[in-house]
Length: 250
Image (cartoon, rainbow, N blue to C red):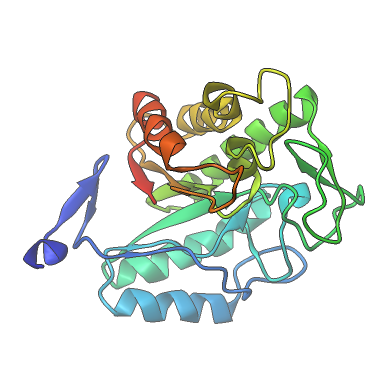
């Protein structure tokens, strides 16, 4: 157990120990614009005080059309940078590092966007919000949304970003044959299903540079009969490693 208390490093970012606070949605951001609130600052400071090495706040939406629910943290606009900067300062004051988890809800959405429908790999109905299959323009725009969000997190003084590729949100939906029923270059084989998440990873890396930690959270198994499973997980991790991912949270 002693190793848990030893310092470690993720692509140049030194952590005081190996304890990581995994992202969980607090629902404490401003309901209208996703900006950091005093309540959210207090919650994050309390965790940082406890001696954690790396703190990952709850999933932050990268675009208005990717927001999952009210009170969710946002990184979709430059207006979110000052609040994220304050949160980074609070966490750093207590010796911890902070990563922003970049998320797009895909079809797993509870807040209808202006269009009235969600975007996902296929036509889905996961919530009360209908979901239509993304076309190439949607995919390109969303890749850019992730990249811009990552740049904002870095500009705010955060120490890393984490792509949310789990929990049946957008990146996870593309990876899972249960949700991804496409018959184009983004569907079918694991290589095709991973194409969109890997495009996102490359764009994020280009936005933040080679010496800024980029991580991902991914399911090892969807626990669905026709879902993403362990036999896909290891090959996916090897793809991510080849593309330069710095850490994988399972």
